[in-house]
Figure 1 (cartoon, rainbow, N blue to C red):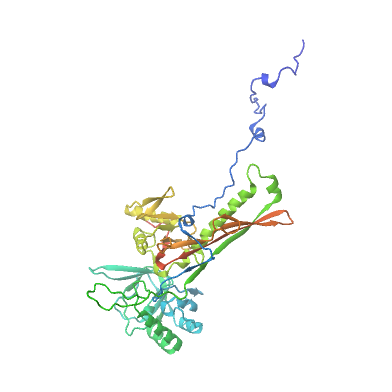
Figure 2: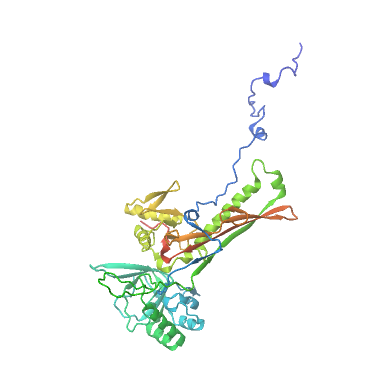
Length: 480
């Protein structure tokens, strides 16, 4: 009997192979086949890209000279700042002398020796929650600096009960505004809502010290004289006006005075050097250009850092440059609708809120407790939460402190409304995006191509009430 020819027929004449009973395939598997197939691939992805609503919502001013000057009307009423402290152990707390110039009374005083001697007069005092520090109508016997803790200012309401007029936290002060008065009285009462620490100095000691130092005495007198000058409700030098008159009276005359030393904002920058090996740029550009992808992700990282700087930079960032008169603290810790209302009413035409996503969630929890449903607003085709019609944008560049608190920022924007504006310069050499350029730096001896990527930017607050911040926002869940 003859045997069949083993070469007869082809694979195309045979049915599709099936796995053998021992589990092994008798044809080409998918793992091997995909080596010859074209893989559909995505562009390189980056988790750190955020919505960057601050950069998107700010009106941007083209600063051709590289510096933006904010001219303002002459300000007579000096704003309050916040003093700072150093702590060496639980009981050794001292005020940093140079920061005493944040007090309106000492603003501009430059004798560090006198400031150091004044700082040494303050004594540490601990207070417990619920303790009344002083009551309205009592004589001012001490001045206080708040090291930490939350204190409520209140007074008797017109119809009885208690009327809360403000919340004070670390770095603020009580009593310094009474210096220069013969028999000062407290206008409000202050109660500690949490345990805290104060630095106190007796009023007689403070008055004696001022009278003993001629330079400080002259400074205090000049401050008191300036406060007696006519000013409008915002503390600006007043312009004489006359209204409601009849006949032909002699009209008062005057002029609008300007600040002699207006603030100037120079453009800041964020830079990096992008390196791409020539071998990669030459051989691995299909189907995606490697240099373009590297540059795309580099620019995204630069823009993320740009937004961080515009929130946190000590020179021009929002959190460090918002006027202290535009800062309020939460009444109870979590951000309540009442807190958001107070922040909203501190300025006209508030355009947006900025908050860390966890702070937004904490605000929603407070709304849920009260049975309130926050509204929404449509911005650039996106549905975002809103409060009183003002959109609330998430911004993960707003920090969360070690105490698990954060801040909520409110902004009025645009030059026309005397708001907050972003600053950049367009038309720069090798511009890649507005205010951002990419410049070829050559090829080094290691065959590495280098590109210098630079973003130029800054931010300006045209008037103090252009921005406000709700501070000490507790973002953790509270017990029911």
